[in-house]
Every structure is written in structure tokens, then in C-alpha cells.
Image (cartoon, rainbow, N blue to C red; front, side, top):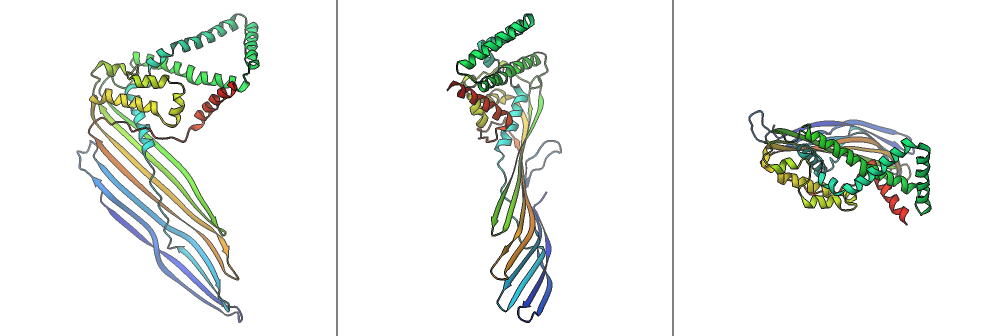
Length: 388
């Protein structure tokens, strides 16, 4: 792969008409002109030779611009005569290729997936610390199940009466529903997940580290938006589509100490345990994943000695659609009508061969909470509203 430039010229047609306003005489002229058409450049190419099987360092960038195609019609009143011009074809207008997106979020997601493959998400230390709350939750549920089984009508009446007493003491239907939703999300679901992960680890279904393994994780961060500007009847619309992709691949040795094996079941980092037990720390993690970063850092410290080889590939791309349309009346017979569009994109690939176990990046702010987290946030907010 070498640096390369491909420049394909375009062609535009021009038609001019000059009309005498008094005599009505017309003078027409039509011709074509060369213009910019399609520009494609491969640059910043840097590769290293390899053995045909192991990954090698590679880097390159691409810039691609297809100049705008369409038409522009304009007319100007010079008093005695009117001059009009009709330009069509490959217009000499080059759309901007925008800016490449940041890859931090995709890299963070790929690293998290690698950590899950190495040690999973089980943390019995937190489950043990919250054993009292979990036992109370399970006990109440089992008692309700037994009561319903023995005396279903009386059990339902008592449950409804207790619900009504809570409402009379200042609660609300929304806060009660929100409380049950949070109990399911942060009580029953983690409990079921811990039981499943524990059984899977015991019976060897976990694939994170019983032998030398090859792990690979991919993640992508995509965004789309449109900038629209209206000025004197002319609408300029620019649509951007961006994607940042990360692929992380590691070859690891067999686990060689007890701490690495214990990490499949529990965190060994007091800071990680303290953060998970801190009230509402999960809310902070929604937008700034401190808990994930602490856990990833612990994983790197525990398993860095297992590293054999690996690579990281970052691919970034932005696609741009540039469109202009509309008409702009001017004074007198002056007029301007435009309708054209063009596309552009630029991309970058950067593959790096790793010499050691990679360290996690500091967490980045994530503004996209998703529908699930927004629902959890609404349920949490209902608890505060129910107390005031």
C-alpha cells in the first residue's frame, strides 16, 4: 500500500442569454468548461512487513470528495437588458469532508468486553456486603408466595391493605411502582446474574482463563446529525454520519496465581468494593463510568503477567452529504435558483501491535443514556418525589 492521488476531472455546461428589454432581441451562447469532479487521496501510509500470520503495524488515511452536481440559474437586470446564466453538471464546488470522530468511547467499550472475557462480571464481595438486604427481599417475597398459596384471597387483601397504608402515609402510586422497578433492576436481576455466573464458573463454562486463550472484542460508536441553514430562501443542508470502531485482540498465558483465579469470583480491590457499595454510585456510572474504570484497572494489574501478544485497531470515518436548494428573488428581474448536492468522506485506520497488556483509558462522559437508563432514572426520581 502506497500513497496515491486520483483526480478525475468533471465537466460543466454553461448557457447564457442576454435579452434586450426594449426590442426583445435575444443573444444566446452555450459552451462547456472543465471543472473538478472526483478527488480521492490515500496518504499517511505506514506499514511494517510481517510473516503473513502475525498482525503488523499499519496506518493510513483516505480523503474522498465528489464535487457538487446540479444546476445554478441566475439572472441580473442591468436596466436596458437582462443577463441570465444557467450552469449545470459538475459544479466547481467542493464539499467539506468534516472532522473524524473521537474513538475514546469505542475503545472503552472494547476494553470492557475484553475484561468480561477474562474475568466475567461476578463480584461476590458486593453480594456478601449486601446479603442482609438481599435476604430481606427474598424472605418477603417467599412469605408472600406461601401466603398466596395457602390463603390466596386473605393474602391479597393484606397486601392491598398494606399498600393503601403506604399511600395514606404520603406515598404515591408512581413512587410505589418506581420502587418495585428499582428492586427488580438492582435487586433481583443482579441476584440472578450472580447465581448464574457462580454456577458457570464452578462447572467450567467460563472461558476467560482456564488455559492460554485468544480473546477478541469489537465495539463501534456511531452518530448521525444534520445541520440546516436557511438564508433568503436558500436552504443549505449538511448531513454527517460518523463511526468509530475499535478491535482489541489479546493472546494470554495460563493463569499462574491464586489472585487471578479469585478474580473470577470477587474483586480484590477495596476501592472497587467501596465504590459499588456507595449509595447512588450507579447513577454516576451512567454518565461517567468510574466503577468500570476501577475494575478494568484492577484487571490489568492482576492479569498483565499473562500477556503474550496482541494488537489494537482503531478505524474512524465521517461521511458528509451536502445539499443546496431554493430560490432567492433579487431586486427587479434579478433572481437566483440553485439545486445541487455533493458528497465527501474521510477515513483513518490505525493498527498498533501491543508490547504489553493494555491499560484502560480514563472514563469519558457519555451523554446517551438509552431508554433503559432513562426509565431507571424516572423510577429513582419518583422515590425522591414520594418523600417530599
